[in-house]
Image (cartoon, rainbow, N blue to C red; front, side):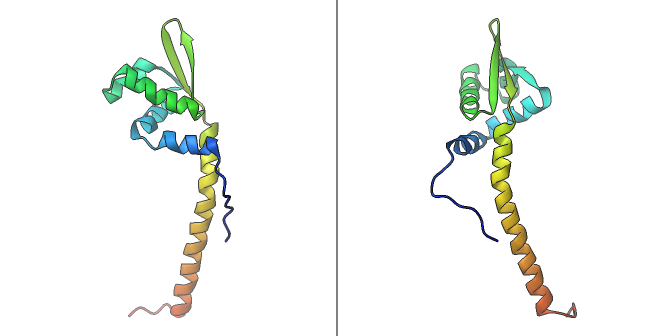
Length: 120
């Protein structure tokens, strides 16, 4: 099994993984996946952090394309955008196929090492 590798990086994918690297941002994405739309105040509530801190997290996710927002008067409402997650999943799938091939090779090796399946 050969993995496709490149010497250049995909900046969009880099931003997605950087956004996903922080547990608070992953929790915010989970909130948005459940609720569809939420205000910044609603997103901050379960984390016990300031609105300024949650806004910084939201900006990181917006730069990654994971979150969009609309203003409703003074309220900023955020929404999950799943496309970057789909791209990240596609990248991860390459490695899943690699590990499945490795496990298949190990299984064949073990079967060949003990063709009768004898247990000691």
